[in-house]
Length: 633
Image (cartoon, rainbow, N blue to C red; front, side, top):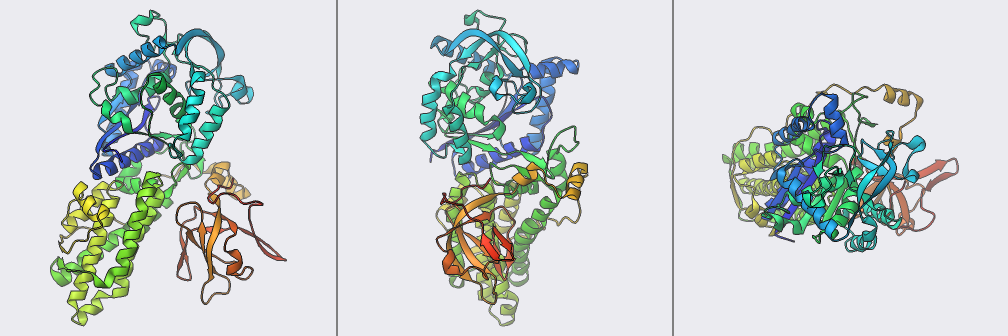
């Protein structure tokens, strides 16, 4: 692992104020930056705004403002929100910054000199909203843009072109170099298929508007401005000083881009081709997340259901908001924002599981030991310690793959071990039996468990993690992580401090609900939208283990390999129709994104699909073997 780490959020287009999707990208980037710092790495974190282009020029004109004044206003909205959200960026770049414009002009000069740029005429369909040219074969019915669905316009103008077609083979070779280069991996396959279909040369200048970076003087062609994607993408290196002072370019050797899936093509195809032309290193990872909907419907200003992230943070708590967004949605999939789901996470995961565990520790420690607890060793909790060590060992691969929902799911199992230990050990009874040393041992075990958990939670919920650490009398920093996590250390004594409850329970909705006329009509008819269907995640898995659950004729306890590295535990009511031994080694179809449920005391993390009629029950299966974890669509 490199000692340096460079992470970038997208630079956000200033055609409108920030929404929940922008917040999601930036929070993920912030989590990556914080985690790298916690490991003692040298980190540079970039965010900012993309401010040139025809769309901005038109939006400014509609408001009777100059493009720069309009961009200043919207860019300021983004920066103020990230500061309010305590986003730990090192630079907030604007594509109107002088050093950026200088770097873009230098890139154009180099590409022109090495033969990758040439002048020609372009005629085709152009989407102003997406700032993208489209061929006739790519357009929707009626000439609409395939990305946003808005009308395109026919353009004919003189352009400079980048020889994208010259880089097709090199790009394909690059994609094959690392299967984790593009995350999630399914997106990598999409990009490969697109490039294999053939690349056309790319228009990189425009002459029909003025709001953009002018060509360098050496080009001697003042009527052209550099087209938005060459301009915007170059921010990732100009922000580090490329083309000007070079002071931070050492970070470029280990770059991770966090983006939305709608701009993956530009980052995974155009951007590396530009870098190849400039003879610069390529990014180490491009991570493309999904979109956010609200109550199953795509957000739009016309529907009145756009979510203001600051309003959510003010209503429910900033870190509660961060936790919900990262815990509730698998990275790469679309997520649905529903207040009831957020409230469930706050009350169940945060207040009940984590907050209550800290409260129980502090309450007993104060009552029995005046907040000072000590235990030289923890012989009674050897098995629990092994479980915790195993859970911690499983977290790094999940974090590296950006499966943050699984990271948090596994992390919360550590807190569950703590709550179970208290319930099973019954320290209040031990105190009656004059076994204070055993109670102290339990509390030291719980304190250690919380110290490790808070350290691992810190990148996601930094302020609450620090409050836990303060109550435990420790600090969360790189040495703490090294000692408790990397080296598996356990602390022998704690001088605890009283702490107010971390999380208050939420009893009702705190924000106005979005309009639901369409949802109500669909519910009445029994229909669901395609967006609602897309929320269901189904995969093929191999039954690795199966056994009957005692005292139940129907329930089987299955361990199903879904390609996640560790089999999922699923409780299935198929025991009347299938013997456990007949299932082992066979494939089944599983709904994988159900909330965990407990049946007969066993946690179930999925649902096996089957069909049942008067002739009995039959499992849904692929008609031929496929790789474990293959999505069902």
